[in-house]
Image 1 (cartoon, rainbow, N blue to C red):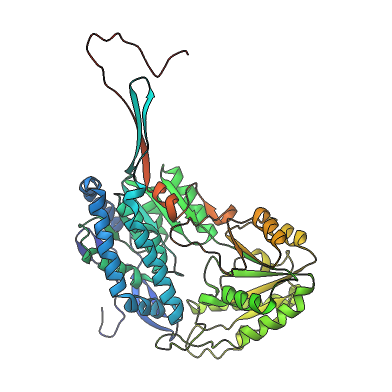
Image 2: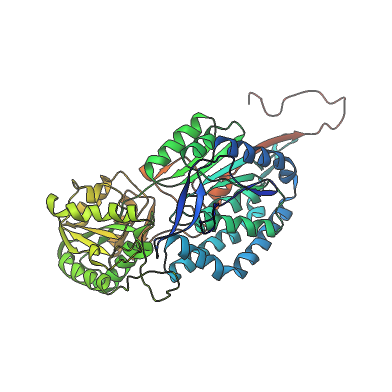
Length: 501
């Protein structure tokens, strides 16, 4: 590397931080607030994957036999290290992703809660016992780790999403390989460094970098038992199909188009504040962002006036070393231009741009201001496609029934919320909206660590969701044992389980 060039990040394999085995091109890691390259991520290779899997496989036997209480003690130590380095971790998220200071701190806090949840895993590994389930026969179940597990994580939550995965997997007795987004490797590296400092044995956690070649090598490797993924629906479907075809357990969370229904009886001012936070928080780059507001009946015009006012007053500014910023940049110039492209064509399809984020003074940053587009219909790309940016589409509906019908036609199914004072409307929405995570007067109905992240439809592929007890079940498999002890050798033989009556 020449003097002055951004450093190429390393891999963690077994006991060492090493460079990638390939000398092919690396990809830039940007500071979205400045547009400058702060690091480079190697594309990686199948050889890197082989080395990481070998290290994880070699460490598995001893780690799986380590008492679960001792595994949990590593997580207790890890929790203390994350708390001690909380501000540093938050600043790192802001630097490589562009979140505001408050958003980055909230992300680190949610990640910390996942580690706290992992500390309670020993209780959740307790099995069931059924004494005398048949004559002189006792039955029991217990949970066992799977082996080498893999996490493939996105750019939008570089701290929290990895912590959705490896703390639970490791405490359950598995070893782990993390493949973070090549756009944001720095948070993942720091998380692994702190986990090693917490006392985790060599090889239990490994870190690789790369693109499709590395992902496919992980999905197809015969020594990998399970894969967790968060990203776009297109890639989630590929991960699920490829991984399951190779005999692996897979949970793959995809994209979303989350609907927020505002009823005529809602508190319009409160609703507008919640909608703006949902749509424009994290610059809209989250799979639980509210991207469609369905204004029902007379709620439409007053809601739109309030929304435009709230969004237009946001302090949109670079976030690095600027705690006053209320909304930061998107991840890259290409992504900024892609989101802006929806505004370029909105008028051509019959929609109306009522707040235009292209007017913001971005400078060298990747800023795009909050945008609101009214008169959107379900045949428009603005409604059909996941935009993943600070753009809120407003759809008009005459009734709750029509709003629910619109939701049923959406191919995604992560989250949805209703804003109302009416219990009947809330109950109808809760029971019938076509999504797995529901909010009532809540803008972002994302579950905390103790509850599963229950996406539906094209927002999730698999059977067991991320987080909560489902996460523990995903990273373990059950063994059932029937035990019978004979009183004496002369006891006449009979089968107490398989009997005719």
